Length: 301
Image (cartoon, rainbow, N blue to C red; front, side, top):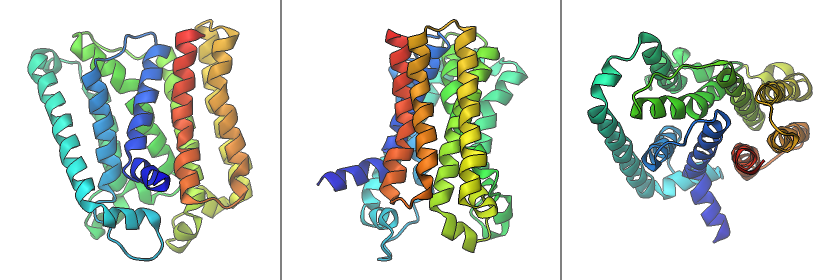
């Protein structure tokens, strides 16, 4: 029963939705901006689940031993119902926002519109058009770029959108600053490292597809020591710089450093073979740990 529950939480991508909420709340607190209303976080959860589930809607039970594929084949009706509910939730929130703030949204500066649409366009380009003739235009097929696309979109979701939607609901223009940029880099590097770790899981399949991910091109050891660990260190450095600028207490900085130390530990351990649940629970779980540590630090530190 426990294994079945874990499968529902992680394979349904609800866990990604929870991670999105944690990172968004963390980002708002770190930038000292009031939290968004509850409906926004429900919207954020919904669009995250919708996006990640879309790639698996065509999965059918194959009996090949792939637990995620078999789960989607067995629970297709549940997945479709979930997608329908979350589509309605997201649409209702956007309609309400548009109705209540139409004039303000319509007159937003071009830079605000560009910032608003950049992340959805990049995220949609990741999967691209389903027609095989356009496969070469899918960003996910550029092996070395793929993890950075994922990190970029997650950083936008967590660092830009909560602030932007808060500004819209209060009809003020959101102006990114140096602090916001440092926090964006922190989340960008953190999630990019997690994505490269997932490429290690898919090494055999990517090698057969001739997809030039970092681990395919450089090998496991070089990927760990020359890519994963330096990128983790860069993300950590961006936060420490931010903490110094904000004059954070030592306790507050220490709490935020914990996820990066865990990230380095997990990166170093990647030379041993892991199960899919290890990637879903431990590696993706680092996003939740990061969000929780940041929230605790900003609330009690």
